[in-house]
Image (cartoon, rainbow, N blue to C red):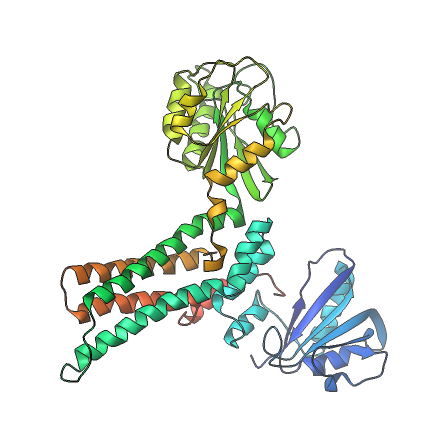
Length: 454
């Protein structure tokens, strides 16, 4: 924190504007060495939340025009003195301006070092910083909203409230155990039980949000499955917006898994078009079918296709049994043909059934809504915060296990000091989640995944 760091804070590519961020005790001094305002003002005396237009120079040579934004500690992103130099975008000019800043005394920032300094300086919590990175990488509006809820501190407030309730009962238990002769009101087991039950419910809800939040951030692993010639490749091409898969009237055309990432409304699907599920003597097609089964087993969402004009066969029933109870949408394709399938039988196994004509795109909006319902994306409670990373999930898992252990100890009639051991473990896990007691190694690991410049 005693050094002044600098980095390019915008994508290193051709663009209208690029920005170099400088943060640390010598920010104004270093900026004054490379930036000359046309107004002639002294950069070192510039007030915070102001801007100056001028030129970047290198030993008397003008490098570029720039606008310098000034932020005085502690009212900045990092909590330190910060200067941001906005110049023309482009790889060459950005690198040259950065080199000038480094030659003037700044040190190259490491991955996420600006956000790391903000956390260490008390400007944001660790969960908020993780939300920043998730917001940058968000691919959809819903994914951005989930990241923003963490960045706004909603996850921190939720976990802190759970931790505070546990700390209060832990303090009462400790006082009762340590000072039995004092006039301390007895902590009723019923009150303690309700507190632990509420903490368990809230932690379980947070963990339930993780898989949904992960879908929003990383996309949903989706397998398109079904018998040969039901329209899987046609649906793949419709969703991809191009001819990714070969479409013919010959069954078994697709012999391997064809993959593509597509956006469908507010959802990112990591699609896999698979070989048709059937018994076959063809050794190449058999390998494709085996891979299809593997994709089906691992998928977070299944789009199971059936032919509107064909009664359910043995392979269809096997597929329905495999996907029953899992996030899935039954797509009944080829609705332009006469109906020969029992839709009620499909709905008995999978609630989400969509009628489509994939060749024309008819039914696409209905498919989008069915996917949204099947994955429970519409039930995500942004106000309570969303777990946005594996580190957070692990801490929440540990906290939940400890709370359940405390409830079990209480129900077994164990002493308060035995119950308190598990409560203390839950509090510690929640403190690690928020970053209040996270080790330096954990903090370093978190920011190692950040982009340089943020």
